[in-house]
Amino acid sequence: MNIKAFKRSLHSSERYYRKGFGHEAEVTKMLYSEYQSSLIQQIRENNYTLQKGDVTIKLAEAFGFCWGVERAIALAYETRQQFPTERIWITNEIIHNPSVNQNLREMQIEFIPVNEQGKKDFSVVATEDVVILPAFGASIQEMQLLNQKGCKIMDTTCPWVSKVWNSVEKHKKRNYTSIIHGKYNHEETIATSSYADKYLVVLNLQQAEYVCNYILHGGDREEFLRLFAKAYSPGFDPDIDLEWVGIANQTTMLKGETEQIGKLFERTLMRKYGPAQINDHFLSFNTICDATQERQDAMFKVVEDKLDLMVVVGGFNSSNTTHLYEISSDRGIPSYHIDSAERLGPGNRIQHKKLHRDDIEVLEDWLPNGPIVVGITSGASTPDKVVSDVIEKIFAIKAAMNCVLN
Image (cartoon, rainbow, N blue to C red):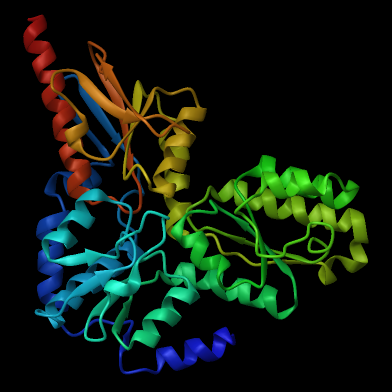
């Protein structure tokens, strides 16, 4: 399949949309009322600090909705405005935030069902329907299937994700294997890998080191394939397909780790083939999302303050939120990842997700007595209003604790 030719054909179709329909004013008003917060604006204007009673809030200087997320949500809202009676589907969560996705459901935007085998069932989509592609994008195979159905397509894919796809296509043009830093089962990485001819997904620096050691010294091929099961392209052979590689990434991964992985592969291939040949064996482009980078940089700054604890707000399945939580956890700061204010209470209780765990832990007496400094940040898919609700709940819990003590 000629992907470039397919994309050109799709993008020129009258059934394909990547821009709004002229409902910007109405949609902006709706988004402001549902997702913005006057309290958050007040904290921003007060040097990202707010004190109330014996609680001091330190808000990261970059947090919450990024431009790509705002754009995707606005386009989804505009799609419903433009097609008020049509059946509208979305291929995945538009972003990893439960309140935003619930709002879409209440607008009667339906999610493509998943069968018992974990596969999406596109048989529900009819020619007259509208299908939204989320901010993470959709695979080439999904877009081809929807195009064949003849339905209308609203593509809200973040331009930063599209930038990664362009890099992967450059790898393919030179017959390079794409090394993708990401989670192999994340929808963005699934979409990115669909643009590649040959690919290998590495989750972290440890896996990258294993691959680089294999490049230099060889190893157990069957062990390699077992370790990376489901994370490589059909027919991938580590003894053949690691001679020419290009680096790409899931846009929500830790910036520093992506850079380390890229440099590791560059050094490895330089050792194997020599400095004069490196440009014939290695390709790398800057595909780290600006918004992800800004939020991580702001997180590194806020954890330098003297904090009693850190609260990170965002969807439990949000990769960029999890990486923010990882930063404060690695510093030894008591850290809590929650997806909404509903995770706080009753009383001094918190329901939070720990790092590298799927279950939700319930913890009593999580807020200490006396004056406390609480760091707050949120992932790129978290509305300001959700953060505001969390802050208000923390104030309320501490006030109630002080009443009991007095």
